[in-house]
Image (cartoon, rainbow, N blue to C red; front, side):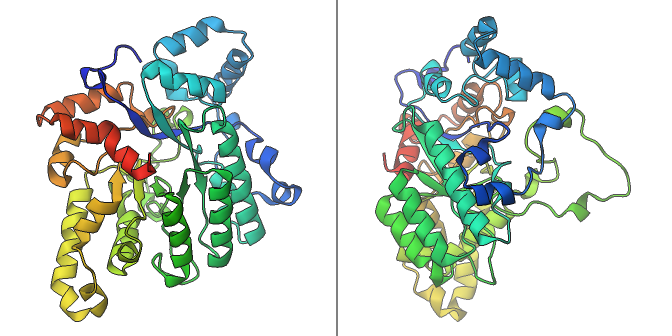
Length: 395
């Protein structure tokens, strides 16, 4: 990464967003035979994408110890190496020992570790609930195994499907028993149930009692419908074949729409009132939109609450539930200083998105420049780099 910025001198740093890079066959290695035979294929098989195979082979060679020079170069410039754009070459992308060591290389105390996201699609949308929940269990075992090298610092994120409330409750209990540190959910309404349906209350109760936060991450909600990209003119993004994920420019401005609907339900319908210690992390969804979301939630409750007995029962303003129970990660290219001034010191969290290139080559420097522009106080900086993450994760 190079020299740490002055914000990091003597300060505890936590990373609220990182990923593993699962290899082909990763899901199958943790799944039952039935799940293996019924998994959906990955919606993107990077091993077959032109321009990627060479990088995968290079990473495999390096992990076999056959390219120590490359390993040392990656370690010396962990976030800024040009090869990071391809992820596969990144130090610690798929090797758990390297990932443990990478925290010390960049001065990070602990890190929330998400899946690579592509593999969740192989079971989460299945119509076969045995695949959905068997796939979830396999996925969570894989995440725990990767983080097992240092589970107090590598904090594993499991997946929880809400398709069936009864099975979801058992899945949540098992994940917590096994040691998962946060549960990532989708924001969709399943089987005609709102995200705030009372059938889910036992799940929130279990998570609240265990201090396990909900994670909403990019991919938690539906992206822009494909029809919105059908302009009648072919448009191909340059370099997209060797970039990451499948997020397009048109997705970025609307990533948060389903998240806002979910938050509205959870607040207006009293879930965060009933479970005041249930915490929510908004990860890799940006944060520019959060001030307006908070204002709009307050306006809706104030102007229409006079007609809604449920809203009248809320003991706090909607924005106050956000401040009490929700924490979020800004993108490094957003104006984190402006967001800080509009949401206060208790909301935002530092993140790298490692090893995905969306995290940027210098997230430390990018965030420092933005926060310095608004003269962030030591207390505000402590909140951003450590305290808000510690609150979310119960550290």
